[in-house]
Image 1 (cartoon, rainbow, N blue to C red):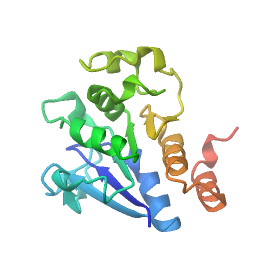
Image 2 (spheres, rainbow, N blue to C red):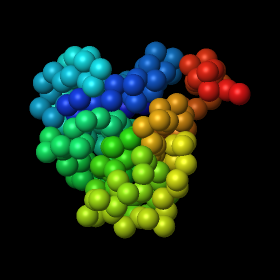
Image 3 (spheres, helix red, strand yellow):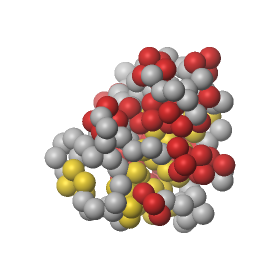
Image 4 (cartoon, helix red, strand yellow):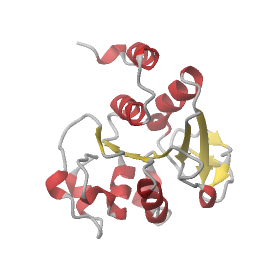
Length: 189
């Protein structure tokens, strides 16, 4: 069974991971768990109170197939966690690492985006990260980008973020496509 860890921060952007969580868990039988800094309850930007399954310190690539990090208000504050060790461990183990919105810039801070094609809210956001040297690989586009197990997206792209994560986990197929088509019908011309 595919296991996906969603690393939540205080005031996380609940809509950025919701579609992935619903489709993966309810339609594709993936095990989706949430984590917070200490495993205690956390509140989203929308005011949703979540009791996570575990704390960040037990996020282990030997146990999970993906580490997904949504954006949110914490990334612009001193509350922002440093995911460098987790991101590097998951990537080194060949696991999927994904960040959307400000969390894509959090990935930039780990140095992982220096060698893969990627996107995010803006190149300027990534360039504020001291470890970031991936400017030549930045794609200024509204859809998610997936390369070598790393998925990034601007905050406006939770649908393609979900699609690219499912593809990277080999969960993309007729059922996933049908569910995403139903949930994203408003985006069709």
